[in-house]
Length: 247
Image (cartoon, rainbow, N blue to C red; front, side, top):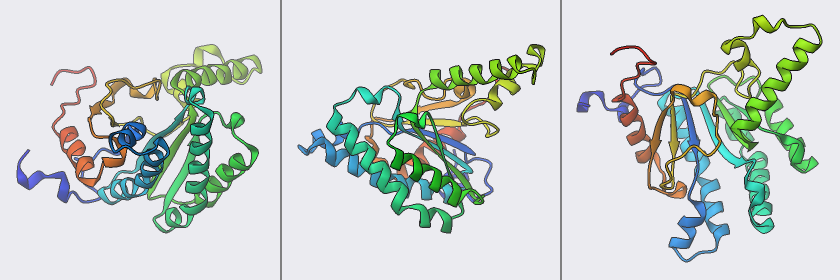
């Protein structure tokens, strides 16, 4: 990539910037351990990093950002850690809504909310209601989310529609199926960024990642800054996305 085409100077309309970015925010605990801090310090640092990265994405022209905040498997972590993660989620939903509205960002929560405490579910509903009319960027928080769960729920929804006579099985194709997934009508991610040094997608957006570019970095999430984000976008710009076709 030449200096003249650097994503660092990209405008909001720049086609070299991915429109939909997904991030697996990994490495909080290891970040803390590396610094001989308690694990809670890593999770707090990771939570603080959400806002600057989301703002940077919006400023660079990203129209959809999906963050993997809490997976269906994360309930297996120590209860004390889970409580902390729930408290951090409450804090974000309580303290960041005004900023989201000022920046015209719409928040959506994707995942199974039934396992969350009632007050947290109410905060999720409130956040979605307050930001519903914002249109600059869609911020999707995946909480108690799993890709297999998502596909299973979509299959259940389609089965109910067929059973109730609202749909003929022959009408079901990939586009119809996708409408029943958590992201619904949103376009699939162009790039998935995973921090923390692991090379897997950990049951995240399994259907949606069919042609997503996968970018892995050893940097822990609390250390992932705007410079790292721009490096990921420049890597993306160099990819040849053929979608099964010849170059």
